[in-house]
Structure formats: C-alpha cells, structure tokens
Amino acid sequence: MVVIPVALSGRSYDVIIERGVLADLAVVAAGYLASYTKSGRKVPFVADTNTHSIFHEAVEASLAAANVAIDWFVVEPGEGAKSWRVLEQLTDWLLALGVTRSDHVFALGGGIVGDLTGFACAVTKRGCGFVQLPTTLLAQVDSSVGGKTAINTGAGKNLIGAFHQPSAVLIDPIVLDSLPDREMRAGYAEVLKYGLLGDAAFFDWLSGNGSAVLAREPEALEHAIATSIAAKARIVAEDERETTGVRALLNLGHTFGHALEAETGFSDRLLHGEAVGTGMALAARYSAHRGEMPEEDAARAVTAIGDSGLTARLSDLDLSCDGAKLVQHMLHDKKMETGTLPFLLLKGIGKAYLARDVDLGDVATFLDAELAGS
Ligand code: GLY
Image 1 (spheres, rainbow, N blue to C red):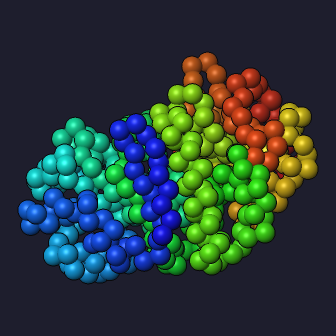
Image 2: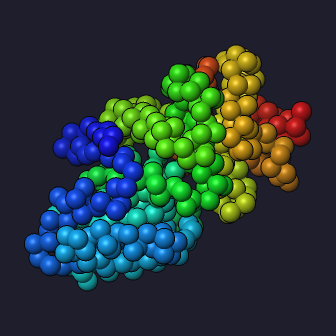
Image 3: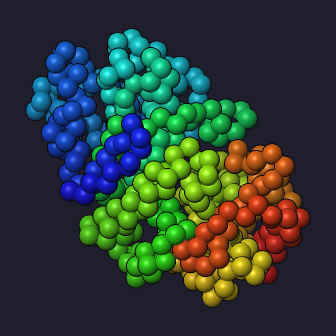
C-alpha cells in the first residue's frame, strides 16, 4: 500500500494506492462507513452506467462483509452528467436519503462522476463528506485529488463549482485493466504533464517506461500513479485555491488544449486528456519558437507525446479552422484573467512557468503554421 498525504490546514487527507482496494473497501474505508454501520442506513454511491455495471458486484460484496448495503445513483456516461439538472436530482436524492454533514458519499467513476459528486457534496447541507474511488487513469492521477469540483453550463465547462476536498482518495490500479486503451492514453497525457512541468527525472523515467505504464504493468503503473499524485499533492498543499500561480502549473497544455476541445465541440472526437497531450506539444513548440526552450527539449517533449500514441502534431488533427479561431476559444477559457491570457510555457523539460506577456497575434501566427504542418 502506498499512502500519499495531501497536507492542507484542517482538511488534510490521504490518497491510498493499493491493488484490490475496491474489494477491500469495508476495511480500508471503515472510518467513512461508520455512520452507516451504526444507523443501518444504506451508503450513497454515485457511479455512471459503465462503472456501475463493471464494479457494483465487487463493491457490494465488499461492503456486505461489514453488513452495509449501498444505494446507487447512476448517471449516463459523459459530460451531460455535469449539469444543473443532474446536480438537482443528485442533491434531492441525497437529501431524501437524509445525508448529514458527517456522512460520506462515495464517487465511483472517472472525473465526471468525481466532479459532480464532489460539487453535490460541497453544497448539500453546506458541505458533507465524500470519498473518491477513481476508475480512470486521468481521475487517479489528477481530477480526484485536490478538491476541484464543478458542473458545466451554457457559458462553458467547470464554470460553476467549488473547492471541496474529499476525505480520502482510494485508488485501485486493477480497475484500469478494464479501461479502454484510448482512455488510458488520455490519462497518460496528465502523467507526462508532471514530468514536463517539474520533474525532469520522472520525464526521463517515462521515456523508458511509458509503454509499460500504458500496458498496465503493475510496478511501472503504480510508480507512475504514485509519482504523479505526490507531485499534485505538493502543488495543492502549496496553493490549494490556485491563487499564487503554483497550482496554475497543473494547467500545462490546457490553454492550447482547451481551444482544441472547444473547436471539436467538447466531443468524443478529442478527449480532454488527448487535447492536453497535443496542447503540451504546442506549449513546448511555442516555448521553443519564443526562444525560451531549447529546440532539443521541445523535440523530446513532442516525441514522448507522440510515442505514447497521443497526437503530437496539430496538423494531424485535421481541423478546419485558423489560428485566430483557436485563440478566440482560449479567450473564453475560465483561466483568463482580466486583460491578459496567462500561458503555461516551458524553459526546458521539468521547467514550466506562467508567462503573462504572450502576444496573442503571435500565438495565432504560430498556430497557423502548426495547422499547416510547417
Ligand atoms: N486539474 C488541475 C487542478 O487540479 O488544478
């Protein structure tokens, strides 16, 4: 078992990585189940139809051993679940169950289930507890840790939300065995991100071991997950609410990536992690274009992204837009501060920094060349 503490004043919690933790939930999560075991009430679990169908038997069997039953709230897979409508249904359901502030709700799924459940728990009775059981690589290494919770609205993604930390994150690497390869690669983009943004040694390790991680070889996979979470825990502990610029480093590749997601309609055509992968390649190449990142380092970043099966060259996405349109999408990103568009750029592998002096006309011209493959 690997235990990584997320140290936050009054809100500290552990991320536990252990093969088989889902089957052992009654023991590992005993503290979060206590209010139900005492009262005989059912435990609220939120899942999507996929995670419910794959994991419900194992989880129910595990809790049955502790004489606890589960009440399920199951949503359709996809971003549609992060809506006011589903949030209202979920919070009504939690209230009908009589959830109290000292209870815990369990989120069994990827980032969508985690974000929705976390936000519902942030606002139900002004804040009840929740436990993240992430079932995708992306959720395990990024979205389940750090307390960002949100839903989407017509104005954009994740614009309504709250910082609400989970009480625990329980990661079972075995669940990734049933994850489609495409989702695995999308999550791997966020793993590569930690190397690129601040850990050159991890980036080097991934260059030699990335294929083992993607093949879900247990030792490599667990090392990649643990190293990623340790990096995220350090960053979140330093800047929980993204006010000092430290947590913003986690957005490496996201400004370019957001534009690509918007251009492809936030659809299955480009998953979030895939957009981050291409976005990080663009951030590296744009940093080299500005003369800030050695060309050789930018080429290594692009190669690592491409070698993992992610799209490293913008021209390979076959978009029918120009650079100015992509810049327009960036301007609608919530991370924009008044009058400026901060960009996460690189001075080398493992050396991300927040640039506030980026000329958007220059970005559009750069993107025109990238779209043309020149
Ligand atoms: N996923 C970026 C963050 O948690 O800040």
